[in-house]
Image 1 (tube, one colour):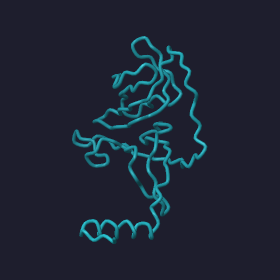
Image 2 (cartoon, helix red, strand yellow):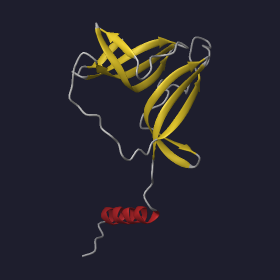
Image 3 (cartoon, helix red, strand yellow):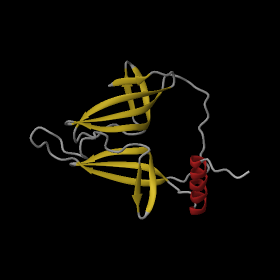
Image 4 (cartoon, rainbow, N blue to C red):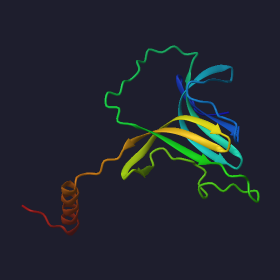
Length: 166
């Protein structure tokens, strides 16, 4: 386990697991340097050779605080299940999603059912045999209207060519 950033109440911890061993989950309590931390988020999931590396957002349980939980009244997130079939090692090299070791990048955009979404956060990680099930939240990506896009393009072209109406 490696500590990535030190803050009093909230820290990032990176942990490594052998493939097919289920990693810790949100809500689990882990111990680091004799201090107990509650896992409150998953920041990154990477595959490095035959090791699954997970970076967690953790809350130090030894510190009392007065922060009130923030409530999001406009919860527009969609639950997404991502399944990754972890291949067997072939010729000493892992073959998964090309050369990128990040399995899913937070903030990246994808299409589902002719709509576009952006990965927002991980909510759970579980191994089921050779399949890594990642539950995530995604937010809709809403393009601007055609009219607004045309106006912005026209404004950009005018600015680029130096044409302005007085």
